[in-house]
Length: 72
Image 1 (cartoon, rainbow, N blue to C red):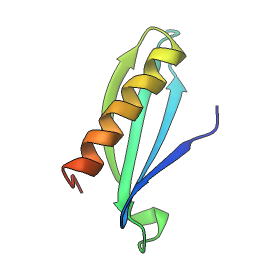
Image 2: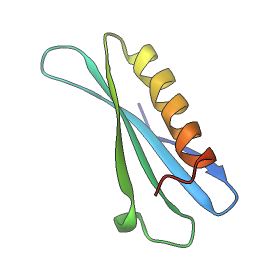
Image 3: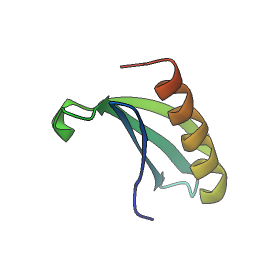
């Protein structure tokens, strides 16, 4: 699937899922200030899930927390 973008004020979180060789899905979160280029993103591992749907939900939860707590 295509990455999703969440924004809170001047902070951006980009979420994605990546299928692993064993068939599981890695939930990924990348955060940065909106004025910064993508190269400045900080990667936050969100976890591994059995399904893509679970991985998307986990990534969104982790991104929401990162935005709320300003984890950059």
